[in-house]
Structure formats: C-alpha cells, structure tokens
Amino acid sequence: MARNVVSTSTPAFDRRILLVGLVAGMVYGMMEMVIEAVIGHGFWSPLRYIASVFTLGRDTDPSFSLVPVVVGLMGHMMNSAIFALLFALLISRPLRASTGLMAGGMIYAAAIFFVMWFVVLPVIDPAMKLVNGAGFFVSHLMFGLVLGAGIAWLRNPSRLSPAHA
Image (cartoon, helix red, strand yellow):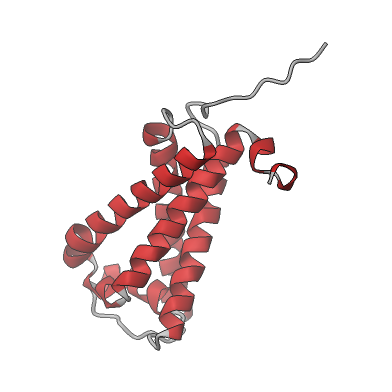
C-alpha cells in the first residue's frame, strides 16, 4: 500500500529551484521590459542598463544591440537563479502555506529592490537608475510572487494545480 507523503520543505539543494528562479526572472524581466517600452524608454533598455555595469553606467543607449542585450540577459538570469537559491535555502524553510511562501517571496523581493536601488546600483551600475523606479519595484514584487508560488509548487505540486483552484 503506497502512502501519499507531502513535503513541507525543500531539500538542502534541489536543482528545480534554479528553474523556478529562471521562470521568476523571465516573468520579472518581461514585465520590466514592457513597462520601459510603454513609458518610452525602450524595450531593450533594462538589459542594456544591466550590461552597462561593465562600462560603469556609460552605455545608456536603449536600442537593440546583440552583445549588450545578451550580457544583460545573462546577468539578470544569473542573479535570478542566485536569489532563488538564497530564498529557498535561507528564508522559505519556516514558511508552510502557499500564501505564506508567496507573501514571503514578495517581501524578500521588496528587500532586494531597496538594497539594489538605494545601495548597490548607485555604486556599481548607475545606468540602472534610469529605469522607472515604480515599475522596477512592481517587477521585483512579481519576481517574489512567482518565486514563492514556484517553491510552494515544488513542495506540493497538487496544491497549486487547476483542479484545486
């Protein structure tokens, strides 16, 4: 007789956390890129601004250019995976409910925003401060929401399935 066991925590390291982080990063990135396009800064501007870390913020051309866009995408996705691992390993463990994980993810992402916006970006990548601050904040919240939902799904896939909606 098989027993259905539901885990309430993620293992010390689960490679699927990286996938959750990449998906959350894609949602965040697309949201940020659409916001920047709609307000007139240019669809590619967030990726170009990320890549400008290597030019100390001097490359602020928001148009498409393959190398800066790829470099920006690589940097963004790497950070998304790293922040997902940190959330899963250090913060999500005491959170049990799906709603707690999603709220915790959003609080975590808001903290990342404040540290990045006010401490890190002015020093290492001032060009990123050209993005719309409110849009950047909301995109971070979306990253946290998707991250928390993804961790909840890893713990119990049936809990977030359409059949339980």
